Amino acid sequence: MAEREPELTEERRIRFRIGINLGDVIAGGEDIFGDGVNIAAGGPGRAWQGLHQPRGARSGAGPARLLVVLDLLLAQGLVRPVRVYRVRESDGGPADGPDRPRASPQPLPLPDKPSIAVLPFDNLSGDSEQEYFVDGVVEEIVTAISRLPWLFVIARNSSFAYKGKSPDLRQVGQVLGVRYVLEGSLRKARNRVRITGQLIDTTTGAHIWADRFESLDDIFELQDQVASSVVGAIEPRLRQSEIERATRKPTDSLDAYDLYLRALAEFHKQSADGMREAIVLLKRGLSVDPSYAPAAAMIGICRQAQKARDWGPLSEADVADAIQLAKQAIELGKDDPDTLWMAAHCLSALAGEHAVAVGAIRRALTLNPNCAHAWMARGLVSAFSEPDAALQSFQRAMRLSPLDPLTYIFTAGMAFAHSTAGRYEEAIEWADRSLYEQPRFTAALRIKVALCIHLDHVEEARQWLERLLHQQPGMTIAGLRSYAARFTAPEFLTWYLDSLRKAGLPEE
Image (cartoon, rainbow, N blue to C red):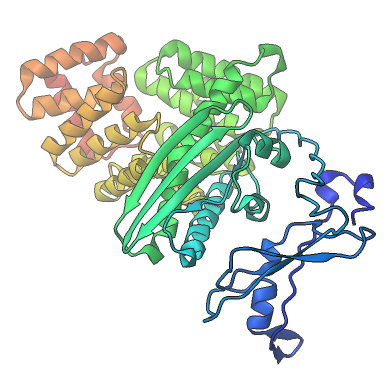
């Protein structure tokens, strides 16, 4: 294999890891079982095959010698320590020792989408038997992140080559061909688990995100929960980092993905100009790649925002085009959770196709149960029909992504769901939280006005209405009815419009 490597591209090269153990085995048909197999290969113990480095001993290097691994490892399920030996080259010392430094591998090119490696977390528990739990948490994080189709994730076997080491993260990025590295530590004491993590851009060394998570629950049920928390926290920061990177690139070298990221930045401005610019960028992206489903789906979200906030001119042809693009996106992006939730929200809000929307969101959550925005969309679609289910969805979204740039939509959704359920005092608190996050969000302004009227805060309602009309000067009862009737329950719509009418919103 070593002799053939120069003739092969990196992705076609074979890396062998060999583990040998002398012990009893159990024969069963064409297979064998038992500790002898598990220790050598891949059972529940600390398998030698996984500990060994590829190309540890090479043909033609002379007689191999055995080096004792200093730390005795206790294999899970065994009652005795097992001494481990590693085969290395014998001429001039270990192949990767100071006498014979290994040649630095050529840096791999970065993929055409954001890329990440999750390194093994440090076990700070002071108990080597907790290694299995630490590794299990990291594997769950890798699995969860791998569900994000817009992210290139290095496989666990490659990233775990750094277990027990303190590598230079810039070099890790070059060797693995990734822009980002997630590293961390885990400390377990009795029933308390504390995890710290940090996300680093390997090209600059900059820290993108860092946080700490703690739990007092049963640790054996924690792994998925912890993984969800970490993934939910880093996903928006990854996306934001990618947006910042794209906006720094020259405009004449943008592909569909970079144009999509720039459109996201414009969308988050929550302004009429920002929404128009986002649509221009997204259409450019579709001209580069007509099958780029996220761009098609996001046009629908932008059109929905224009319709809801009267950021016109918006023709019926524009709305019809957005609906058609959303349907196209569901077909082309049926394995992309972000595409599915955006298209679903558009079809629900602009076309009233709630059944199709619910099905698309259900598929998005099946593909990635950690997708905070899919949970948000689930809440938006069900806020006026199943308010309690909607509240649970919004709470799940906030739990998964507590620092999300769309938090103001999560909290406004909570306000609408509580209003539908008749819990007006709680609703107004959530409306306030939404307006704190995004003072220009007109949906939160509208529900705030309606709730103030219902709670007999008439003067305050008129002050909020003034702010609303400053953001949305042309809004009327008739215009709001024509838009909201597609997705709200009749009883809620009547209460909502009557309250806004009492506050002074013009009829026509």
